Amino acid sequence: VVMTTSNGLVDGKTQNISLGGAFVRCPAKPDLEEKFRLVMTSKDRLILVNAEVIWSNGHKAEGKSSHHDMGVRFTNISGNDRTFLSGVISSRS
Image (tube, rainbow, N blue to C red; front, side, top):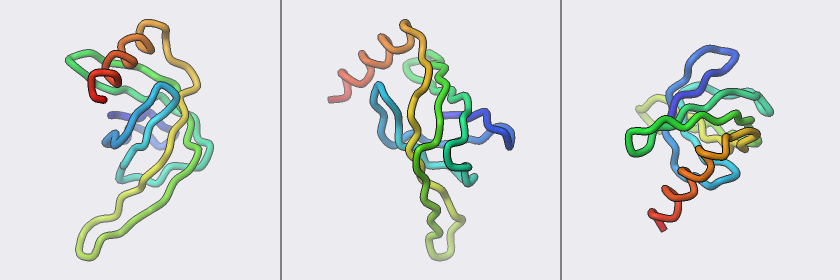
């Protein structure tokens, strides 16, 4: 997943996803309630979503670089992307 934030492009990894939002791990600390554009790739398709951070936690593993976990809420997703995402989520459960 790639996020377009006020600090530029940030790469992240989606750990959990639903139609309403996602759990994302990234190297940059997000600002709480920051709104951004999220670009996800699934099955060779790009899914574009407007989202906002609703919670975040920073972690530092011993001897490793830090990462930040955050919960994001989708604030705008097209009907076609929502339908596609629903199918992806259903196939994983």
